[in-house]
Image (cartoon, rainbow, N blue to C red):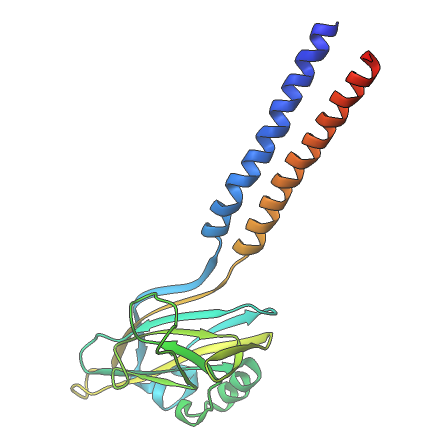
Length: 225
């Protein structure tokens, strides 16, 4: 019976330590995998040049941001005879402009920061602020970060509903009206929170088990004494 009890305690210890180690390993892994959540990703996205004269024809993707959540847009324009403009606007502004089929160029965009070095690289060093970007006149590709507003190069979090809109023109023959571009839209995922939580749980299990083991040893020594 005593031998069986020790065996069960040993198995329990292995299980507890195993769970703790699993949490400590899974934390960084899940944090990396869920760091960003892709909302939309498309190469050769197609709109027509009518998009520059009416919002109903423009590319539009809704995004909801919570407190301290960041929107990330990577956009490029490498197609012949085409030019595009990207803006980020509030949902309320979009809904009204859409109902009126307003001209996108007349809609004021919200502040974001951007960089144009290294596809997928975070803004740093030469980061700039803008409310709209035109491609390729301002650059061939951009990395954009948005949280609702900005002051200087620092983002300010304004939770809410927004739209990423893109409109453009084709300067080729009149019969060619297609406008192509590449775009990827992401938001901050639960990766960091999940990473911290799993590491905390794993460490807590180890500490709690170590304390219980220490108490058990001290108690056994006391009884023998």
